[in-house]
Length: 634
Image (cartoon, rainbow, N blue to C red; front, side, top):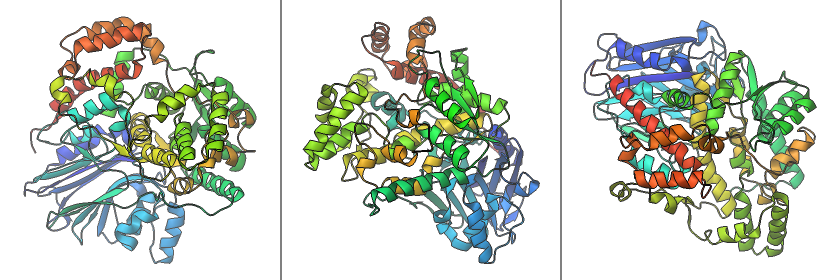
């Protein structure tokens, strides 16, 4: 796990070592253990400090092979390939053995060297052999190309700016701002989509919150020919939504269990201490229980808890897992603290607005994990999108049963859903009216359009997420996996963990597990009025029964609704009444104040809207700081 950075100058000018050194320094939190850069003349392929046009840099967080053998940039033994790499290839041991049989030799125990050898053996197809997370740039001296790639789900970041005269990349936006970019400007379209459609509609393309900075999309690579200056971007992996398993029900459960156990097993490969984030749902308890019961690994957990009676407190279920496994645990009670100072600090690490208040609590948990001396943390991210864990998945399943003529089963599922979750049928019938649309749109669309200034609203290009599978439930889950839930949550998880020099690993996003989960029948997703049945079935005898049979989903969150109405009320009101706020360049002050009155009077819950607007206000202030950091030239 590291941070990467670099640039290529296309116009014949020469760079300086100070710029690349500053780029490395800006992301030292991502890699505090080691750092380095190489300056190259692409005309000769040789290192050259004075006449270089290509710079590659790395800040290293040592996870595998803590010796100097893992130093980056790393070159192949024959000197033809140089790599800067951020991430982990979890199957590197198996891949290294395979490459040894093909004649490759290794001088380190790193996965970095395996990436280089895999490229030399398989070329661009090396990506198909990797199971892990990555963002890397590889310079091939013989072909005079840059090969830039990002993992299948975008777990690791990759930002870049490209023009006719320069190409600059980095793991974080602040790193690019240490380079002489022409400018940095807020991406108004992305801001407006967030406010009108919601945070789930902003990470479905190659845009960042800055007009001048793009992100390499998940499961894509960029190939730049440094001689011809041609650049191509290619998608190298796509989830096959037509594939259906022919295994029996018993075999399906066994296969899922086997894949999840192996996904956890290979993510415990590390030469540094690892730990686990533990909630009271099914996702992280399954990972922790596999590590302890099946793999017999030392297991220590960290959990966010609140006062008893708080709707977000899951201590009862967390404690059940801890008692069942007999493991050491840490409870963290996230506090409001100096909210605005903390938010300002977080945004300085995120570089972009933070999608949900969940990560305010998450930040405090990650800080505690670092304080206790850990470097790797396994989390439960990604299970909801592959095993069906969200509340509206029931409704999409009802719709699918209706469309396939299974009305008797549909009525049974509706009845059990109402009983299990204390819901009224009207919730389903109201939602049903919206489901004949050919795309998924935000339910807050009409409400929040009134907030946006008219001249901006007129230019808004809203994003639609189409149905891509025969099953509406599968289609919805696919969009959440590839465009909505997973991408938008991976970004703040990476920034929160890397702010404390931690590596987050997500077993549920093992591509083998995801591919299999999308090939199984819907009855393994939603059945008998509850969700995540494939995970529940696979974890029988492994996860504590109280947790395994739990019906309600709470989710990792923070009591922002209460904070806004109480401790934060006065400060927020003072802030909103300031007509000079940066956000009032985009939204109408009178409408916003009206929403605030509704929120305080319990007439409507605008918690997420005000979280977004507070983020935008403090982010706009941070943008001014980034502008001042821009280099004026080499």
